[in-house]
Image 1 (cartoon, rainbow, N blue to C red):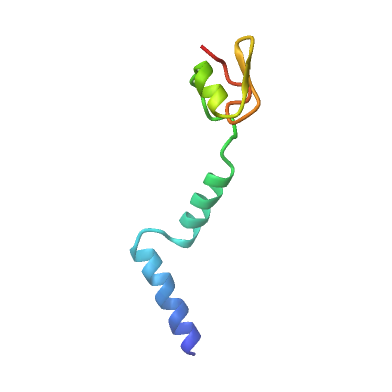
Image 2 (spheres, rainbow, N blue to C red):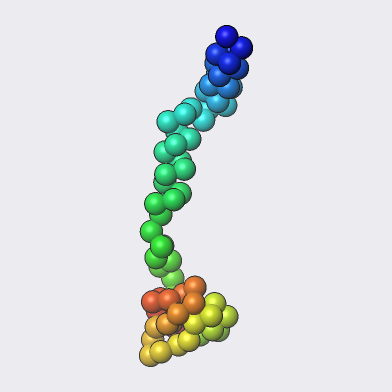
Length: 71
C-alpha cells in the first residue's frame, strides 16, 4: 500500500512538472536517435586538424569533423 502511494506521488509530481511519462520517454528517444552528421557548416582547416582529422582536398578526413567540407 505504501508503494502505491509513493508511485502515485511520483507520477503526480511528474505530471505537474509538465514532464509526463510519455513525454520524458519521447524526449529521451529523440536525443538518442539524432543523426551523427547534424553539422551543416563547413570547417576551417584548423578546426579539422584540431578535431583530430586531416584535410584531404576539400574535405576533413577522420576526427570529429569526418566527411565535412573544408573552406
